[in-house]
Length: 193
Image (cartoon, rainbow, N blue to C red):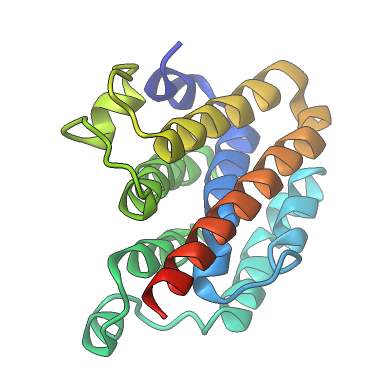
């Protein structure tokens, strides 16, 4: 099943976990540590967490640079495209954790995370767009993009197959991806510096 199909079939918790996992893997681009998104992950484990989602989200935004309009200010400061995409993921997170709102966010986060990995991959992805990758056309995919696509699919499958019991392994998948992306960014910095 393609990533697009999995997102289309996911429930509210799976969608929220999918979007959060994409953001989590890219959080180091925003200067966040490994624990900054933990309150949001914890809120996915119980139904009461849906009511507290907005408050926890605002706290995360405050820690990662506030909830100000991301985009125009970042473009002026010269931050690169990968950081802008990560900021937009955070800015677009819905304050209300409803299925309709998190579906739009999860879909946008999926695209953004794949674009970030494509931008940062030292090997070029032969595909025209990340949309083709999300629809299952994977020929010529670069390793970093392929790994991100697998992680996104895995997170959705874990939540679809195991419900709340899939949250811990989904977080582990995300943590692994965060380490990989952090290492890629570190290598790029060393080469430039």
